[in-house]
Image (cartoon, rainbow, N blue to C red):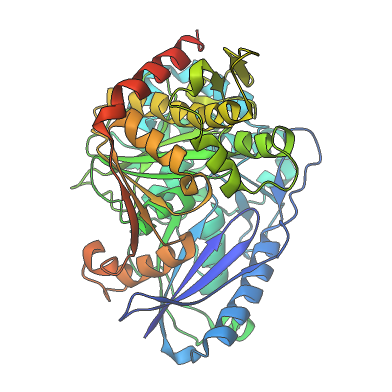
Length: 491
């Protein structure tokens, strides 16, 4: 018995086959091998053709089936993870009406800002837990205003994962978690946010039926089965946005647990057990995968644009050519905690929501030409990234979250001992590193939705913990001093 998980990203589509009994991944593949095209007709625009996701999904399915040797009738359930905040519009024949407006498209920012001002921060934050922002609802408002001929043909709107589920099953539905990430969910009334729908002039019929995150959401049709080389009738039993799914992949389900990634951008995603929000809307709050009316589980998402990209910039411009990231980490370790007084603000990759959408740029403070070397700069960059995480975690703590443990994949910046030790030292949290990814998590989510696993404890019983990093009490004061100096540079 096997579980098939898909991760629909903006760069590629990945598929993984997981043996349901052992919990082990038996095959993985992704396509395309170079980054998928993002269409940018105008500055700040970002679109993709949903049909491209489906074509890439067919290729990855073919690859994992061939690599694994698994027979198509051995697959018991399918799970989907997807890039968040996108907008797919289809007509009554399930025909895509325009390219999808994806997560990094910024054209709808003025629409969200205008709605926030008109409706008021108290109403928006207490019901949506966020400002309308540049999320799916505001993107739909842009289409309504600028492409009325397209808007008039829309039968249903979808997130990218909803589209893939439609292609698999022929059914259009969504989840509370998905609606919340699009700013369509009212947490006070536990229903579609009628006040925002009315403000934008959206008809309620545009919203698909809502299904639980872990549930049967349709079955693979004969047409899809023929295209994919799968068996007709396999149930789709799980779907979630990539950040909630990343948390699921790391077995993060309960209040106080944190999932983190540090690639090009950095993410801290924590689970809150009470309906709450940041009054300055510096972090985003969505329904987590296990949120229900009876059990509040909200994912608080901190995204920092200028994280790993600073480390890669250091590699390209500061260290000699040919130096690997591992060698860079060794050089950073030769400098002391606090980098002998250098502080780097890592905000050189556009506006930061954590800073209330200010675009401050990256800056380096405290360099002394007589004592500082390349090693100090490399370490200061990694420390600056970590300190931006701490800044955001403090916002989460202000929302009532107790951050005591951080789960992360053993990848990207978490491969650096300096990065890991600094994060543990400056937050006081224990860091646990795991071997997993989003498509594997989606497969295990499918196992939970199909009832193959009783709960997350059984689903992730075989999750491989690679390392545990605990705060070194002797170094806590030095990390705190360095953080306070970094913080003073923010003013």
